[in-house]
Length: 106
Image (tube, rainbow, N blue to C red; front, side, top):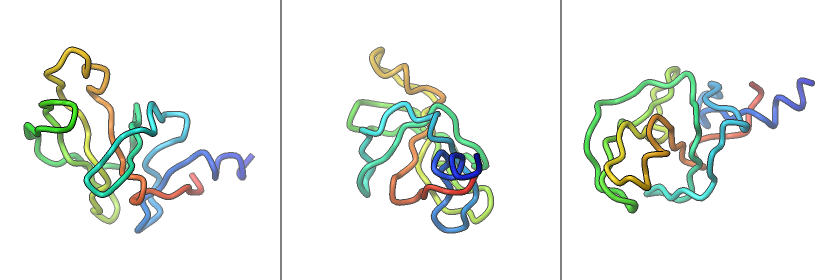
């Protein structure tokens, strides 16, 4: 059972703090400034930065950067509000950059 959990969890690449579970992935087709990213329905052990409006590829969103609660590494961002109707599904979800997270031993 422990081995099954190990491949089903994602951790901060710097300090191995558990930040998300594989089962919470909504999409693997997201793009961040530094490459691919995953959209998660839920992330844990993170700290939210200040909210700001940001023009992204899919339109204007209110987002907050997310940081590892242990080491403070920036891991991605959380969608607070989407202004386009077709983007509303992202609200409350987190994008974690693929190169900032590793499969871990949650």
